[in-house]
Length: 221
Image 1 (tube, rainbow, N blue to C red):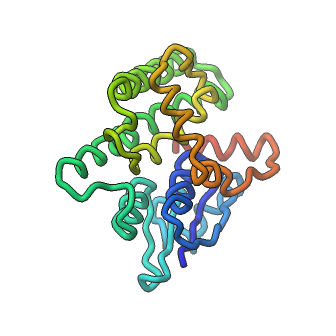
Image 2: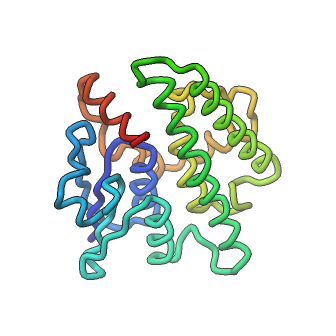
């Protein structure tokens, strides 16, 4: 059994999608980011960075894994799914996984904050992060022109990592209407039953506006 400590963010949904895809039993532990539960001492023992998601694998003596990309790799290796075994195939998946982790996540996360949440609208910052996120989306679109999925013909953890972010592109003010290949991929991945289930974990809570804003600010802390 796996415990999943998560919340309603793109990074959290990477882990829930993967758990749904591989079919491992898991229990959802919903952390309230607006109440700073992810900074409590008991949780920091599991995840020193005080972010979500984290998993605890009770089949491995309560082994904890934090960082969403590391969780995806751990679960892929545990189950033998969504990660090729050959060296080139594995490297290709990890390259696109790192592309999401190092590029799309940080840039779109900052675009979210400056576009939606900062009390003072700093147009330079909004333009900078929206422009860079859009550039990264164009890289994805070019890759997907000749590939069904990010790592080639097979669905992988690279797609699982990237989909929850692209799914909420409009929240950061990013347009994708002219990125035909990216939109095709988004629709294909989004129709997978496990993706639909994982995107609904945990169910969005009723959260007041101030709590939501405080949680969003954590993206830049």
